[in-house]
Length: 294
Image (tube, rainbow, N blue to C red; front, side, top):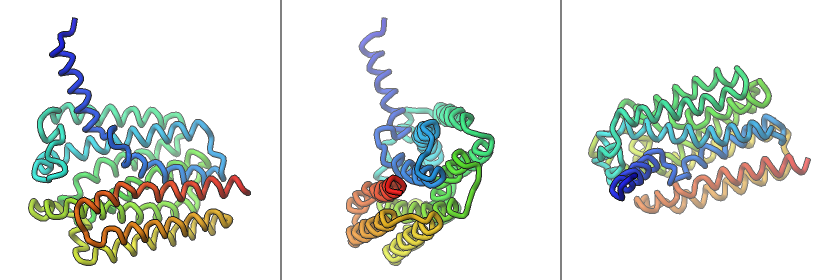
């Protein structure tokens, strides 16, 4: 029979794993999910299969958690020097390095099991997604562009979605991929602005540091590139007025978001980042409603 102390220890261990995998902070999963659904809707011309919807939704949450685990493993000696991350379970030693790597492998195997329920084209593409997810956390030591690697990783589910639904990768797939990559770099630069002072002290690189005083201008350009990419994709898809209205509404939302961080204050930037996923919701609503009205 478990003692009260044993039960508390088990509860604490589960809580640490929830913190490590970020199941308590789903915004990152939403930022990955909405663009994946854009691609599913576009690839299936508005009627994605229920099987693929379930597979990709579950896969998003599993792989995002795997990415968080390997990210914290890569940053285990850095996080203790950053105000926002210094109490994470891996850097505090509440979860060991070996346990973290084991957890990462298990989550990847679960995600791979989901992909095996699609087709071999999607399975082959998934290997590229795994490579990007594993590589990204280590990029901040070698380049000021880790956000670009994150964008590539976060966008990789889009060609996978096209492969699963239509077994092809048309031009519109890559237009959506580039648009989402630009959006990801933009919102992750806002996120990096939160840690910029700490990162400068410890030598970690980011686009927020690279852009320096031009950060707001560069974020604005990335937002504009996102809207242009989506506009081109909508043209390829011969979308209706609803989709174009969603792109315009999304651009207005991003304009407000950019205005809100003009002070560059840490808490304001973090709050703006947390709202970023609503842009994905706006664009997804455009896809869903536009196809529904055809």
